[in-house]
Image 1 (cartoon, rainbow over the protein chains, first blue to last red):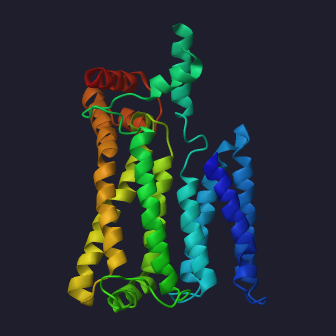
Image 2 (image 1 turned 45 degrees about the horizontal axis):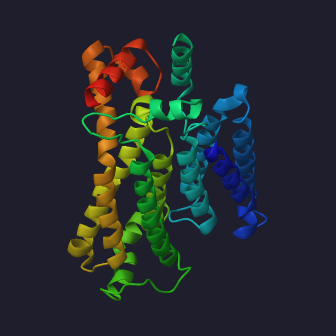
Length: 121
Length: 209
């Protein structure tokens, strides 16, 4: 679950980014993108710990693609630091979202096969 | 033998054609550490490109490093990707470390997709780094010491990582050869267990032992 913990931390970074980059208060869309993405990423990271919603990380992948696209097209390239931040955090989130929940263990199916073998033995 | 030792023995298997387990931590941790070193160097160069620092350290070529990082080629890549090329390089090296750490010590069989993703991140990155260093000499006409160091690290990473990727591809090829079913190969790629894939893997492990 280490990848989910880092995703939650990146979500926190997205939430404080408008203050760090001193975004213009009038730029409501950019504020909304940062805060909505942050809330979604943190929620998905937490939901991944609950077995019925263990696939929530795919939502994180979609959010990361969306913020990469927004960061790239919202202003002529190369954009201001706050948009470059969105692109970089989006790429980071995309990489982490590909890491499975219990990454250091075999996939669930193979674990079940091993357990069955143990029972048969 | 307790459960933990049993689990360790089940996951730490030799994968052909090697006489060792290419997914073992002792194989992967050095890759991750080296990738993190390259990440720090690339992030340092990104700080210069963002003008968060005034100079870039270069004990060999002096001011040539700044000319490379400020070159039209670097600006063109910044314009193309929306972020500086050094920052993208730093992310790619961090990706090597992330994908290197993910997965069990038998991931060449259990999660071939992860190994192949790791390989895609490491191998093309090494080639791109070497091409960029070549561009420094031919297009920009200057050299950058830290860029050369990261390019060398990239090529070393390719050498260190290819064995695991090879084992995963060999496993998928053996599954295809044994079953001639693209559906079973697809399942093997994504780590879904099937009787046929288990037999192929067992056969590979037995021959390697």
